[in-house]
Length: 478
Image 1: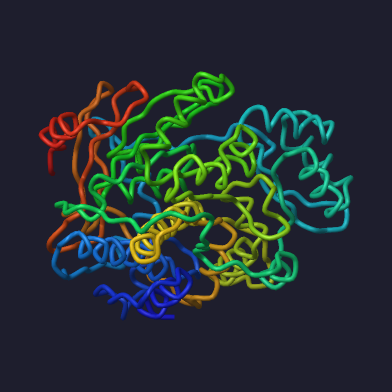
Image 2: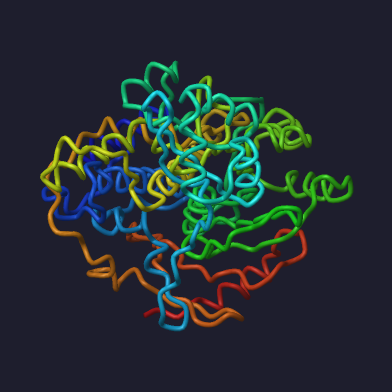
């Protein structure tokens, strides 16, 4: 499938009037633009998702009094952005890759010869997984423990205990399980509100207030994309939970801390919601709803609000926990990646499941969430109402697998080659960071290259004066 065709699929899924497609550069030699040794059309998917978000943002800008503008996306830069974390430098040095450090993450065989992927993830999940298996945190011990289980039984036990893991399934097996199919962008009206009338502004999403209640890459990529088009993003973190540093998609946001289990902090968040236009939720399904922040209750607090749910799965699996690598195993990606690598080695019969070693689904899902927000804003401008955007890593995987395959990948790209126009630097208390900025080009409203947050702020929306001061502190361009 071409980038233009993938763009049209997203346009239909969002249910808005057809948008003019961006110019997609490099689409005729996609096999030479692939940043990973993998058969999936990552350049097409990333360019289509980013291009659709930009096209919807540009249409919003027209409603704000702006002119039509040209949009272009380079497929290589879009694909490399899926691994933006590999480009981040601190004081001139690449950041080290995080180590999992536990035997509860990896592929293991069950007693019925099925492969199952375990994901300990955070320390408390690893500890509870070891308790379920009655095993020490050592690969041989976990191998022996998993080998005693039937595959489906262990998968069900993990889900029942709120842990993460999945059998390695084919694409066809997943499609049979997770019915009905989910579009890459789900958009539905959840309440009544008058049409939105945004005032004139220099940026498509200028003055848009976004509450970011996310912790991992998908949510970070979503709100970073919105911030690049001018939105004011306030990220809310919990003092009760570990908060992994997200540098690749951390720029352009302010960060505050609230404990939503405390009535006073929950009321502070409700006050922020009343003055917001977008609320992004990437916590475990139902977690925020249990604290009084479901899409329906949020629409009641702030009529016209756009809520976003980012989750691992959809359909019958929707309540389950999941991470990038678990979803790759569940949806058929790990099986197809293993077959592809076996063929690349010239040993097509020696097939082992394998992962694409980058958060490709997470970043793509974040881009699709941002596109869904822009589409929902257009629906709100035209029709009014409160809207809910629903995206998941599994739906993204299903969409990605419909785009076709790259059967022969050229030599692996050097990620930084040709990216100089998109790289920039910013200073924090920890030192100088070099980051990959937005890779979409708009000729009249070029995306913003924001600074990384430098500590917590009080839980309030920035005033016009504060925003003006922030604009004066633009990151250095390199």
